[in-house]
Image (cartoon, rainbow, N blue to C red; front, side, top):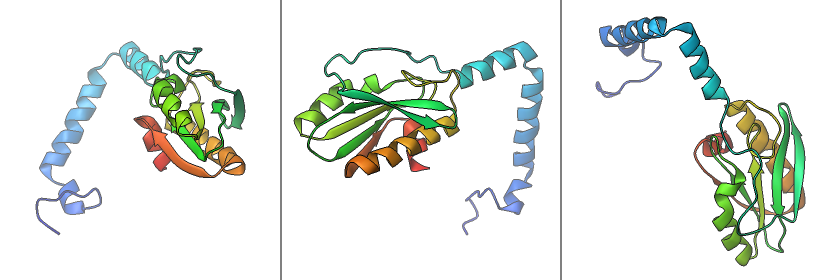
Length: 166
């Protein structure tokens, strides 16, 4: 192992004075943040301000599924076509509407498109969101889509990518 690489499980590196200083500084800074400000920051972190209900501008879904997850029902906008399936997963504080132009192009290419609204976003249930909600949403949709059509691709943005890779 090269001397300049830092690994999380390397005890020699993690016990270095630089690492200790970083931890002490972080803790000292967190202690100085007033409780109400810290509470507000965590509220904003777990409550996305994404648009709740909306309409697609370029295309209209053929139907909308509501699939159960541990955190509530996830909304899936289904654009039927004869081709294989493409699933679209948006990022934090966003909705499936982000993919409006892409959906139009995919439909022109004869793909069937499934665009989901993650829990706490868009037409899905819930007021809070976090990575586990993203993961549950993606898993529920992929499970259902695999029973309907051959899956050709999953297109993701930002936090949706992280959830899909899980």
